[in-house]
Length: 68
Image (cartoon, rainbow, N blue to C red; front, top):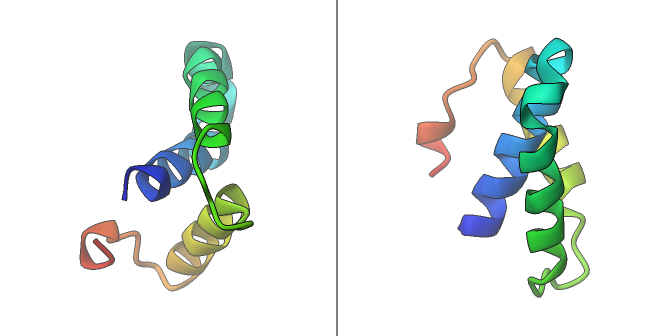
């Protein structure tokens, strides 16, 4: 669950707070380093999170609580 949440939050920042990247870029760096230490079964969780967010936004629903 921590891996999935980290990936989603990272991608959410990348998509929604582009102009504020200087404020969260260190968090992103740490998150990506942390993800590299996790066994992900060959999955690209960042890509999966990006697709998840794209689908939720396209459906006008960014209600991640229903997913969790």
